[in-house]
Length: 522
Image (cartoon, rainbow, N blue to C red; front, top):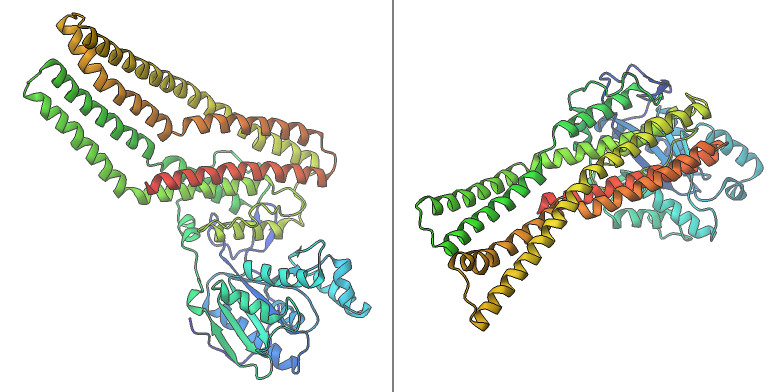
C-alpha cells in the first residue's frame, strides 16, 4: 500500500463507528446486525522535544488520514501521553475522531513526577477522554518501565508511527529503541523525520489491511437464538454473532473422529478376514474380495479426510469464536472490560478478540445490571450452564472409556493365554483337537493383538482418558467458583473470581483447539 500524503484540512470530531449507545444497541453504522467491526491499531512513539511542533502535527495528521483512507475498518490510536510528540499525536488522532487507548509506563502517581503540576493537570484532563488506560509497570526501574511501555505499544499495534531524528536513543526506552524493536519483529513502521517531517516506510509489505478469519465469521448466515432473549444485557450484535458461530460449529462438525475410527475398524476387519482364512484354511472366492473391499473403503475414507480438511478448519474456527464470544458475553455486566484475551497470541483470532474487547470497553461505562443481577445471570447462564455441559460430557465419555479399556485388557490377556497355550502344547507335545488348534493356536494369536491395538487406538483417537480427567477438573473448578461468586459482596472481588473462572474456561478451549488442530494436520 502506498500512502498518499495530502494537504491537511481541519476536521470536526467524528463519532467513532460502532459507538455503543446503550445495552443491546449500536450506532447506525452497524448495517448488519450480526457482524463485528474490524479495528486497526496504530501505535506511536516520538521525541519529547520538537523543534517544530506545528510541522510535526501536520505530518502526523497526514499519515493518519492516509491510513484511514487506505484501510477498511476503524483505526484506534495507541500511545502514552508524555510531553512533546505523544501529546501532539493524541491531539491529532482525537481531532480526526479516532478513539485513543492510553498506555502508561508507570502508575499515575509515579508518572506524574515527569510533569510540572500544570502539565499533569492537562494530562489528567486528556486521560479522561481515553477509551482505555493501561499501566504497564507497577514497580521496577523507571527506564525499564519506559522501554516496556514502548515494546507493549508495538505488540498491541498493527503499525507504528514514529517521530524520530534517526539518532540513537538518549536513554533506555527512547524512540530509537522502540523503532528498532518494531523493525526487528517485522512490524510495519512509518517514520516521520523529526526535523524535515519527511516520511519513510519500513516493513510496509507486512501490513495487513484485512482479517480473513473475522470476515469469514461475519459472512456466516444468521442463526435462530438458543435463548428467547439476550440474557447477558450485551449489545445484540455480540449476542447474535455468538449465536451464529455456535450454530455453524454445532451443525458443521465434519465428524473427523468418526471417520478416523472407521478407518481403524476397516483395517481390523481386513486383518480378521485374512487371519480367519489362514487359520481355518478357507479358500472362498469372496474372502479376498471382502478383504480388498475393506482396504479400499479405508483408503476412500482417508481421501475424504484429506479433501475435507478445510471444513475441519472452519469448524474449529467457528467453535473457537463461539466460545470466545461466550466468555465476553458472560463478563459484559462487569464495570470494566475484562482482559480475557490479553497476551493470547493465537494466530487468526486477533481481529475477533480485539473487536470484542474494544466494544466491551466502550460499553463498560454503561452498567446494564446491578451486582446482584449480574451474579444471578452469571451463575445461571454461565457457571450452571458449563457445569451441566461437563457433567453431560463426562457421562458420555466415561462409559465409552471404560468399555474400550475393558475390551483392551480382555483382548490382551486372551492373546497372552492363547499364545501361551500354543507354546506349552508345542513344547510338551500335548494333543489338541484340530478345531481348537485352528482357533486358539492360529486365529486368536493373530487377531487378538490387532483388536487390542485397535481398542487402545480408539481411546487415543477420541482422547477419552484426558477428556474424562479434564471434565472432572473443570467441574471441581466451577463448583468452587459458584460458591465464591455467590458470596461476593463487592465488584472487585467478583471481578477477580469471574476473570479467574473465564481464564480457566478459555484455557480448556485453547487446549481443545491445540488437540483438534494437531489431529487435523495428521
